[in-house]
Image (cartoon, rainbow, N blue to C red; front, side):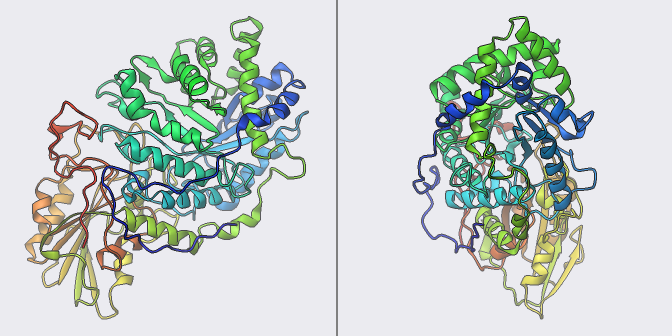
Length: 612
């Protein structure tokens, strides 16, 4: 196991528009170096076994667990909310993985499964896992070494359950903060995405895919999912259409994939969305001509959840379109039997060439060989010795560091911050002060996330304040900000409630009435007011900016609330710099540094961030 002690905050100057460069990494082993082994196995395979390798089912929708063997499935996944029947515990997830893998090993060729799961900010489906800040916060750290370390720990916690494939990192460069997946992107700046995305791949895949602590990474969602135009998707931006020319596509949306491939990423997931009216999952130009032929991607492509179904009214026709365009494995959660039978028929009818099947399966097998899954000396079942570090204090220490480095100080009138931990009384308020669910955001145990006391464990900001102040300091609380009279300082924690893709698209990013009222009530007490904003994107601050003496953008920090108090009480100076432009009003949106023909006059510029 690789253990990582906490690191002191760097004092190097941060250049606002450029990423901190990561240290040089050894060049990964080329995946096609495993072709001799992959092609030798391919020669032994029937058409049915080949198509099985190209099929991914969701474990939740398996009609019969033995379908894994019957259909020679190459992969199984757990999509959002696809949890073990016995709950979300570490033990339940490990048993689920092993049970699926054991069935795969009963097949004639005994080819192990890839088991995939969304890993958006830690092993976020599993109780007790460390939940890191979402990528928008990590982007504010400008710290590639830290992002790599976060991904290494994430890989360790994923591998502790046996699972060997992480659908991460997201290397989108989102251009419109109204998009509901905005927090999955590190930045609007492709230069920063390029550096941090590669760091995440290195962290997940370790010293090589055979690293016992490593998991297979997946760069997503190819390509320009963060560049869709307002009103082209359902309901707003998600699964929409990126109406940009090829030069813009290459300059803004492609760099994250270039660096991920250079870092050796084993899989890429095409987007639900379209590029100029053509679905990415149907585009031969994007998947084959650019990604595979031009950029030299040697891994395999996995479709998004039911994405192929969207390509044509007839499922069989949709399959032909996507496979012929270059898709290698299809995520067919419920329709895996239909996919298997339809693809077999398409080959037999000559509508999908055998050469395309052989290419796809070779790509899948070369990844499995690179991961060591085909090595008969090593079992593909879960290594339970890895569980000793799952959710450990050592892992939480790194998450806490990631929180404090991600915080961006937007305002600090009359040096309100840092707070004195020895004052007589601090009053805490706001709906998110003692709400771990809000603090973690979407993709936390539940797909869309959930407000309240998420049972994964962690420390809320309110609880962190209580343990940070001196033993003689009284900490009081009211959700609405009343009762603050007589306190020496007030901290109001406000912002968004959890959301994920689709449901997170918003026409209006103004703060809600409850948040505004809580700040005003605190202000009426005549004490210094610190606002901590919990959100997956910049929000329209409005009158809250004037009412507050200090404002801290904490993003979606995850389970380690003490990372926030590390900065509030001055143990560390804030170092975070905005990874997205912060608008004054909704009328300015979309607004970002890549828009050359739009007046750039935001409330806070990209790269902004105060220090003490």
